[in-house]
Length: 197
Image (tube, rainbow, N blue to C red; front, side):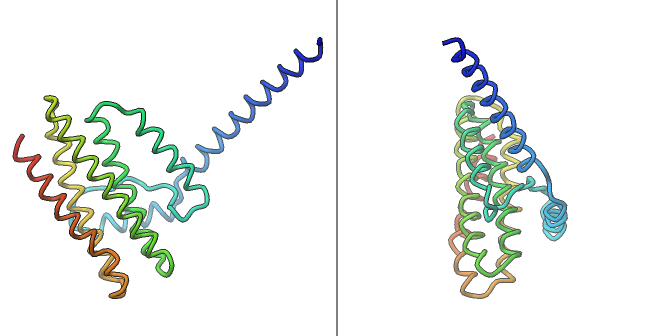
């Protein structure tokens, strides 16, 4: 009986240490910026004629620990309730995934399918950002700055998609055909948002 209290305390201490180590490992892995990605991000920004900087993608979807990052993003999104904040969050996620898609496409080969699905997920986030911005506007919030960011981001996404697909084979270009159409639809939606300001 006497020893059970000590064993329980030791177990609690070990649990705390384990969680603390996992927490630090998580931020060490997901928080570090690899210089190769930073350089490639700069290349994307310079090659495009649109003056808009995409967010740093961090781990790419082909990394074995990417599921941790995706899980973290889903948890963060769940806890954001204000439509304006949610729109900003979704825009950042869209930008990160477009950048990740570009970097995956540069790897070529079997990464093209992953690049396409990553780009598609980016545009799902972008669509959510548009919807949340419209909801924020309906609630009387000032969305002028965010609407402009959406416009600039959409232009950047279109430019990057064009740059990506120019270097692909015809078969691989077809995989991105739907994304071209979606980006044009989103461009119209964003223009409508800006016109109603």
